[in-house]
Amino acid sequence: MKTPIETLHSCFREATLSAFPELHEDPSFSAEVTQSTQDKFGHYQFNSAMRLAKTLKLAPRQISETIMKHVDAPSLIESMEIAGPGFINITLTHSYITDFVKAILADKHLAIDIPEKPQRIVIDFSSPNIAKELHVGHLRSTILGDCLARLFEFLGHDVLRLNHIGDWGTSFGMLIAYLKEEEPQILTGEKETDLTHLVNWYKASKQRFDADEEFKRKSQQEVATLQGGDIESIKAWKIIC
Image (tube, rainbow, N blue to C red; front, side, top):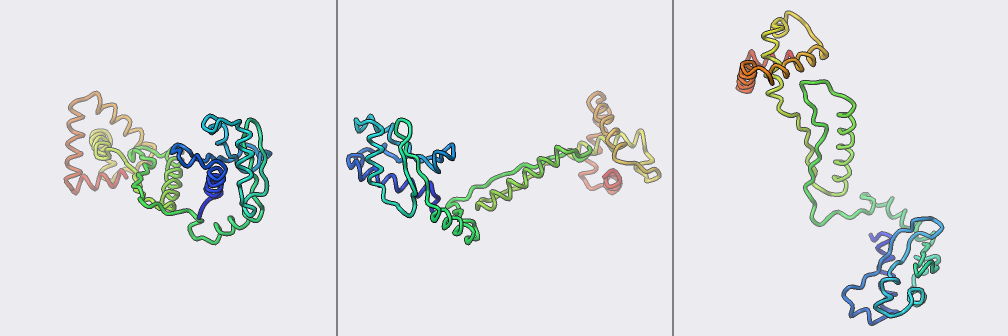
């Protein structure tokens, strides 16, 4: 279904070519219709008269007056008036607007065309570091990402949702290595902890990882052991999670 601006574009293109047949030979000719910037100017504006003045060697207002005489769309256009140097302000009929809205409501896809060539669109969500606490920024970007994903899916595109959680192996490798040295009772289950303590230990392990080559080597070994499926490493990982 054509939108109002598409319908007006066709209408004014036909009217312009009817008023000035010589434009059929001009490949650069196009009818420019835009939405009005203020309600007092009507719903839409036809803006091509100024650009056509040089080609037709006529004043823009004279061009607009001639084009208006060739517009024949009583069910579409309520009124037209020339403003400024030659804009045509257009007001649509109430019946056209009513019928258009009814058609949108009756269509299961709200009269939005499905693209002929759907695009693959990748939406990157909050991407948290799962070794640290979440915060409101993660919530905000997740909501925005989901809204965009739903919108693009509704428009008919192929959406891939991504929520990259970073190098989780290194994060937990550092944390396991640190806890083995500083808080071994946590990993054996003899002592309980909470997220706040884990975040502080993670920060401490990161500092040591960056400054201590031996600790860095141990952390990387813990990563390899964990990703290799070692039972004790997986158990430690579950305790931390």
